[in-house]
Image (cartoon, rainbow, N blue to C red; front, side, top):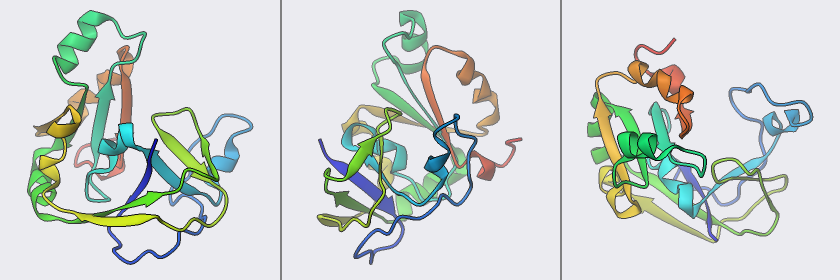
Length: 175
């Protein structure tokens, strides 16, 4: 297994634990997830962060409980799908982000969509710049889907799919 952190900053020598920028409602006993942590994503879920930082997106994939009809309707032959507003596609083509590989030691698995956290400073093992992000999805079995609005996809949370919404507050018509 490999762990990564994606950033628009090309010069991170060490990752210091820091609180999240926008705290989330956490289950009782897990409020500490809003506190100072270093966040990482595993290699199976890295496609969730192949975007400019502020890009709103909805990511879906089947879980064992997903009915086959829903899986086929929403995913077809894809492993996962990533929805973005159409006007973000140009930025996916043009911007560069930085993928830092992190050591697995010291990280705790959150058991949630490939997310891991460390409570101490972490030095990256490797750093690569990634451009033409729109070309990174297909090799991972993920279909990038441009839509005029993410709002009509809100009903995905009522399906049997795993649904992650990231930076939706930046979507042009999200409420």
